[in-house]
Amino acid sequence: MSVNTKNTTRRAPRKFGPSKSKSRDNKRQSMLSTKRIGPFKYDMKEILQNSAMEESTASSFLASLIAKASRTSIKDAKLYAKEFISPEGLSEEEYSKVSRLLDRYSKYR
Image 1 (cartoon, rainbow, N blue to C red):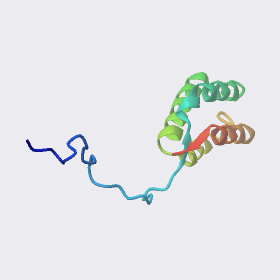
Image 2: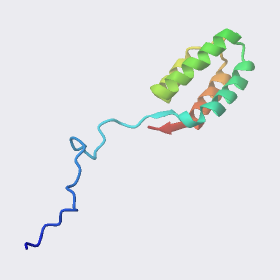
Image 3: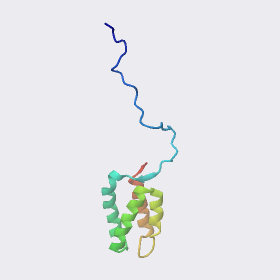
Image 4: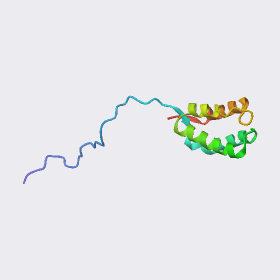
């Protein structure tokens, strides 16, 4: 009778693909936190109701602003909002409120 000296219950370590380097190639960017979109929309709607912007324009502006802030960066969303500074759009004060809101609801990703 031979005794099995190999431990057959031990498994080899798993390899799931090429190893990833620990250094980050892509820089982290400030983006809108997807967990906090609801409160962000609520606060933005308050600002847009008090602005001179029409309701249909405000709705599409808000959707585009959320898309830019959550997919590209807060910086691009601020540049987009700056394009709407006009007498029939956002005032300077309302733009600064929007900018502060974007910073408040942002997260580095």
